[in-house]
Image 1 (cartoon, rainbow over the protein chains, first blue to last red):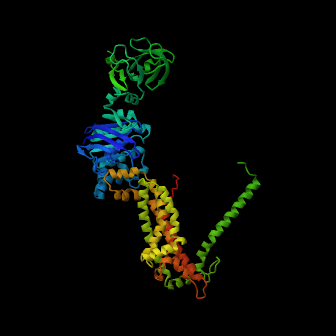
Image 2: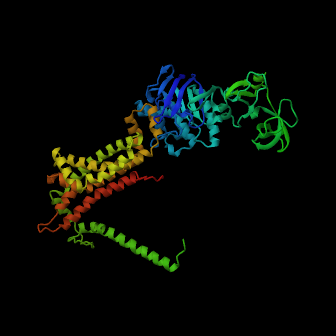
Length: 350
Length: 277
């Protein structure tokens, strides 16, 4: 087991595309770490560079303190699960799981016994003789995991582990993965473009954009205090309300490009006037199950026609067209200057 | 499309049936002859119900070159197939994985030129080349020339299969520490096995049927393959020796047909040609 340290890691593809841009990152021993970002942000390149499938243009990759930047993938002691699982179609499940041992020239009988052991851990007992083509998506994923585990690596790398599963199975696999990682305690890095997946599974996460890391933190930190407007708009299943703000005269932040941000979940809705609340007319009500997403069109106080989303509990769901007020919870409204977080709106204003 | 009147539809179907029968007859008559003539006491150039005998086979066994030539054919075919399949697999794998500028142009050019190498047009240069390399009257010479001629097409066929193999298979193997050769042996070769089988059968059939190159490069009649020996089956009067020729033709055709049926059953032929199955 080992942590991963990246130092000034840069990857420039032969066409000049800078996929990783002088990136620094510390992933701690035993951590379940998510690399999150939109497609093309370099998260997969980062994972593949750690695996050794891509060579870094410059910079350093350390696994467990040892510099592995120039080592071939097979000597880095990592186990990887690919997005398409990459199970060998001509081998049965047992041979697939035993493949890492085959490369190490472990005798066939011995490695198949070991494979059966790992398969049992993942609930694949009855499937050892099947070919990958005869398995469901969830089973294929577990076989790919078992194969990565069979090598007993110091680090697991998972490339979009849930993207090939259908929605229902995805939830199940999410819980399964998180529990497995917890039990094994092996440093695990996974790549995802789905912020909900990253928030749900990771101990810590890095949000990436354009080959750079925009924020590193626990899911709670990243959700509650996005460090910049990119993270603020990327994280959260209902996007954060971002409103242009003007500093009151005489404040230190006067004259700058300010944005006021508050998550729909951190706004309390009321159908009666409240102090320090956004007032407006209910434009749309979207049912989210136990809650509703209410869109308020700000009328008098705010900017003309600005829209504010509020998550409202089912008991106080308003009718479209009604007047409504939304008040941010203390400390949850944030202020951004030139795209970067300044602090909670109250502190910044005070 | 406008619906044809019933009368026209019937006429159309009759026309199609007649045409198909004619084509079918054209191709099946020689096969019929091949099936009946070897067992006929006095085979003619037409297909007829044979007056049954096995004498023709006895006569064939007495011919000093007949059986040996089949063995020669087998040697040439096996040697060429081994070379072609190995070299084509390596080349196709490399070509589908490594970015080479002008790769497709190169492949098409090779494909275009390959038909010349084993063709009549290059007869003289090939002969001279073999002469200077001391490869005249050696099986190796024939194998090398045929390999050169067949390789481009073989690479072309196999590249279709290697292209269809996801690179993640190889990356997975590499992450577990497999060397490039292990990746090829454990992962790529088994995955493209139907392609390898296709190319093997195709190569064997090509070499088996090739007349010109062994005729040109081999002198010793003991080394001549079946296709060349068949050419010598004449009676003293200069007439084609039909009993011997028909019997030998049957023996000559059997191995290829058997091989095709075996491989087809075992692997199933899968030419992708851009069509996903």
